[in-house]
Image (cartoon, rainbow, N blue to C red; front, side, top):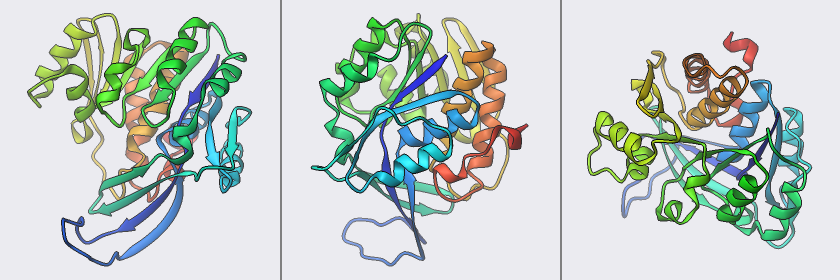
Amino acid sequence: MKVLNFGSLNYDHVYEMEHFVVAKETISSIGYARHFGGKGLNQSIALAKAGMDVYHAGRVGNDGQDFIDYLNKYNVKTDYLIKDNNEATGHAIIQVCKGENCIILHGGSNQKIDAKQVEDTFDNFGSGDLLLVQNEISSMDLILKKAHEKGMRIAFNTAPMDSKIFTYPLELVDIFIVNEVEAQGLADSDSSDIDAIISKLQNKYADKEIVLTVGEKGAYFIKGSEVIHEDALKVVAVDTTAAGDTFTGFFLASYLVNGDAREALKLATKASAITVQGAGAAQSIPELKDIK
């Protein structure tokens, strides 16, 4: 099985803060670092570290060769990653305070993915392969349709959650991967109560598999009337930036190979618990041997 992650790549500018900036305020950071990031890149590396055969498709600017080298370092194939000389690489401004973060995202070249790139990429994939996508790139509707035409299984991490999500052919998705906020939006729920959200997801997406992460409350796997819960591990969080992406990669790697949702939840929970204890995004994702 090949995994095609058609996803974003961003430079992460990370500022350690005493508190998050509020309106009309100017404050100094107490630390700064630049990392490779983007939900797409993080999830590709997590999948590769979990042992999958991963191809990353996407777009970087002329300043993006470092991303190609970085992905290759972790055995992620970059045959379908294009350098765009007319656009800057996507980037994120991340504030980190007491283990929590808030993020400003600029799409850059991630928003320049076009029909030709989509067509050329999917010529190399077919039935039995998996497409993984997030909501940080352009041409999403076409990407989902092409994957379906090819007979690929489709996993969609609906982050960031916005109104565009509902313009996509969601009926083609096999696995939704969401956190609490994304789940509430996907379910169109007025309530933030987890049980209420799960009930709405079951009714609205009865034929889908749904992975729901709820931070320190753990994670759920939902398929029809079946609900499996896994508790989170208690650790001291340093930076939660790539926790969800780590969970996504390790869950999919385990579930796609073994078909056991409970075991996949356990592995992904351990992986994300290790990730939050390190600083930065992709570099904090553990190796499979470290988790075991």
